[in-house]
Image (cartoon, rainbow, N blue to C red; front, side):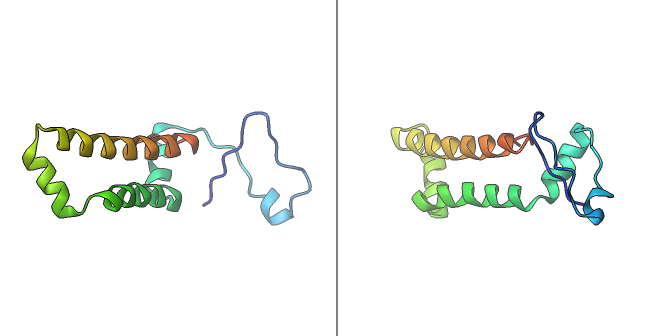
Length: 102
C-alpha cells in the first residue's frame, strides 16, 4: 500500500486512471499509522542514512569513541554539537513528511 500526503488545500484531479481512482481512500493519520509508515518508508531510511553519513563525514567510529571517552571537554562539546545538528536536520526532514522524528 502506498500513502501519499497532500496539503489540506490540495485535491487530486478527477481525471485519474480508473485503477488509481478506484483505490483512493483517505486515511486518518494515527500515531500507529505514522509509526508503521516510518518503519517501512524508504524516505525515512534515506534520511537516517544521511544523518549517519553527516556524522561519519566528520568523525570516524574511532573518533566518536574517543570523543565519548574524553567528555567533558571542548572537543566533545564540538562533536556533540555536530551530532545534535545532524540529528535535528533528520528530525526536520521527517516532520516535513508528516512523520514523527524518533
